[in-house]
Length: 103
Picture 1 (cartoon, rainbow, N blue to C red):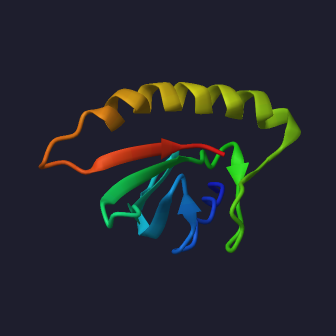
Picture 2: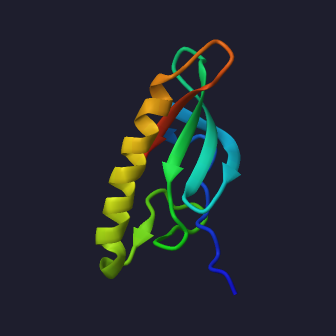
Picture 3: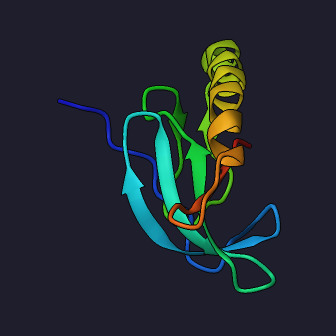
């Protein structure tokens, strides 16, 4: 039996100056949200939230990571941010700007 996926952030949550509108997708390493900036610019916000390492119940904002999983969670998050940074800077008029984040 597979482990349940962590609950997504609720609509209205503010992350890095962007307000979550809705969840777009979820996968093994995280969740993608549609979010809106102060100037009504729509962006995709990608949250690092691997189901194998983190848990979050509905209504919670910060994921819970067991102490023995913390080193792997931090390492994965650092690598995830590093790989996401080039993608977030490559933006054209036909693509959405992506904002990666971890807690």
